[in-house]
Amino acid sequence: MTTRRNFITKTVLGSAAMAVGTTAMSMSASSYRRIIGANDRLNVAIAGLGRRLGAYYEPIAKKESNVHLMYLCDVMESQRTKALESFSPYIDYKPKLENDIRKVIDDPKVDVLFNATPDHWHTPGSILAMKAGKNVYVEKPCSHNLHENELLVKAAKQYNKVVQMGNQQRSSDHTIEIIKGIHNGIIGTPYKAVAFYTNHRGEVPTQKKTPIPQGLDWDLFQGPAPRREYTEETWNYNWHWYGWDYGTAEAGNNGTHELDVARWALQVDFPQYAEVEAAKRHFSGDGWEMYDTMQATFRFKDHKIIQWDGKSRNGYDTYGGGRGTIIYGSEGAVFVDRGKYILTDRSGKIVKNSQATSQEAGNVLGGGGDMTTAHVLNFFDTIRGKAKLNAPIDDASISMAMVHYANIAYRIGKGFDIDSENGIIYDRDAMKLWSRTYENGWEPKL
Image 1 (cartoon, helix red, strand yellow):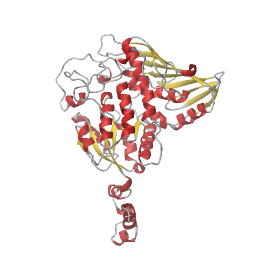
Image 2 (image 1 turned 180 degrees about the horizontal axis):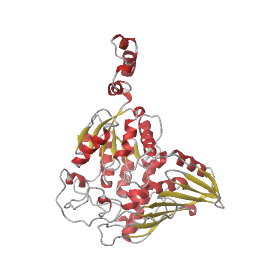
Image 3 (image 1 turned 45 degrees about the vertical axis):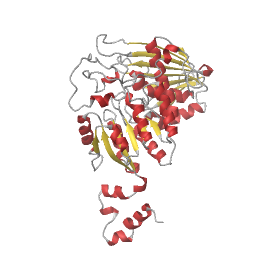
Image 4 (image 1 turned 60 degrees about the vertical axis):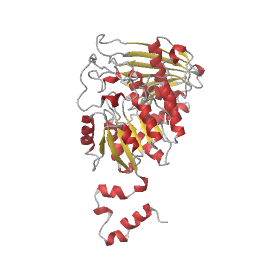
């Protein structure tokens, strides 16, 4: 039986196509894409059209991606219209605009969901998508709490779906190169990694009750979170800092990336112990409700250690860059960030400076760049059976667990022991924060 692809190839590119005067050269780009590779095309939807949107322009528009953007979805009307306009230079068709992620997920034609919603929607939305047969690219943090972390991994296995977290440095050529070198002994035995993030975020407005902004579906924004009245500035990014209903603080917002690189370099899984020193140090009277400064320490088997130095609102350049990871070994050390790696011997002499040409954004809100593009293409290729995920969710979730351990230690005011085999915490107070309170009927379920 002639396949559709063979039929198209013969009729469009062969003599029959020439006979009617229709060739690939005479077709519009949109018509050509609709025909060539139709059997391999992926229909994608993006939910959450905020600061990560720009990261998707290139990988979705690239010809080799062979995808069709079906939906742009957001609970804020202005975000939808802005996203449509922003995408217009990259694609020559108009995706549908949708308010409700559930309607997008219910469309059987959608193959892939990009989940760039606020943190509290990441796991619930991703599980709904998997149950409906979609593969999922979920931005960091992939979960809001440790319970969701478990559910997400189980869902990927149960529904046999490709799920990749947006820890895009896993697809960075220079990072892959130096991590491979570390694993092959280029700095001897690696024993410690310091992950860091430095920014100079300013004062945040104090929350006050105000009318729901025009065009915002506040009920749907809250989704799985307990219902409350709207407070000013919440929906547009500051939800990160306004309590624990929606965000995961700076550890989840940014620490995820460098903690993941640290784990990768040291080849460790769950720690045995976690503790933090953290507090709100800046703008004491503003609306920021979490720590803005944190020093987290994670201890592993074989005396390995990972530390995260997070400074959200003090831009002092401690390490020679706004974000990155330093890995120490018995015979040398490595500094690696999104743009380069620097390899030194035990005396501190530079052995190699990679001078990578990566254009991935660092501390700029939203980010995006060649690492994200490579990460998304790796995701597409894995769905098609041509590659393996660079950040499979069962491994990415372990890096995510470290974020949750740090946040829990801060919230209960003490460190705790952890079962390094399964990640369970040996502390009653800490285990009370393993999950969260959900709005009735919105609990994520497999």
